Length: 404
Figure 1 (spheres, rainbow, N blue to C red):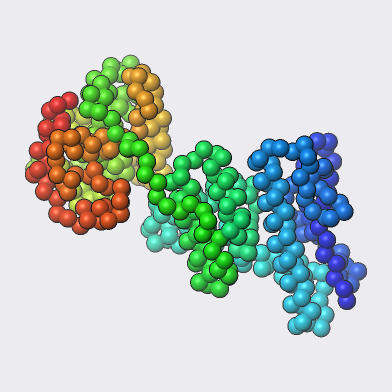
Figure 2 (tube, rainbow, N blue to C red):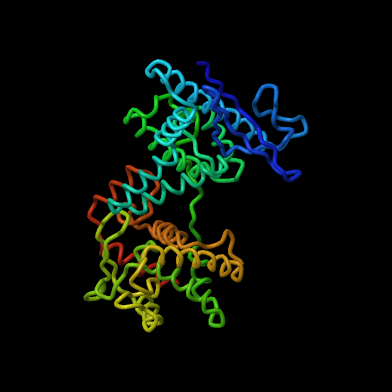
């Protein structure tokens, strides 16, 4: 019994709106349809070839890319449908159109790139690696924007398709490091699928950027830090709080925001603030200076429980809280920057880079400051493993703070 598989187009009932592409399967006079997420305008559909086409008047690069992408995805879908029919023909005496559709959908789900990426994120979350899970989901969100929310299978992840994604990313204005960040996450999931036998290795990421582009340092001069410190913001409490959190990070040798959020009063003992870095697990100690004490005292009555700073304000969803506060602070630091005439605008990360840069200017040995953190992996590892000479760093920090 011959099975007919055709790509069909259903026009929209609303003039000027995109219609839907679907697949028609006919077997033993039974007709079934499989809907797709692909939508095109009437003049973008070629009824004779049963495929997407690019009208001459369509010149927008983004639309052209999308049409090419649809055409490739449709080809993969039809190939899978034919593979299902071929398998049934060889192994079963009888089967129906419903059987074909059911098996096609099962295979599509099994080979779903989105599904496997979400499962990877779920496993990481279960292992307590929440931040890593979030990076995978960030990559997925970007990729799903590229595919207009449509899922793709591992078969669709080809070198050409990933080059299209790279071009799309660049057209949105993201940095090369962001391109690399997304590509490396997607590549990791793809390689997992290859190891599990769900995909054939065709090296789809071979021709896209997965390196590490050197970026301009996000550091400002000591005079800018001094200007920010003495800005009159009493009438703007939200901006004042953002500025104060920026200054606390600078005072504490560029402490990261997630570590600031987790500080508790018990971290301060005998004139030393001791905490463990969330990112690396490294134990750090900072000599408690007057500027730190004054700033913490300023917000003492606003702190929740035994927290040192008013970032976490309740016991539930701590991670969500700190991320929301961090977003608001960075947004308000832009406003602070505008008031102070500072360009490019400040962020919490600028405090970290600035302290490291200023410490280097003060001739602090590179092995005892965080100037090398996050620049080159070998340097980062070496510094994480080394015992910091905290007395020298404390002296350097006091030298910097006294200069403010």
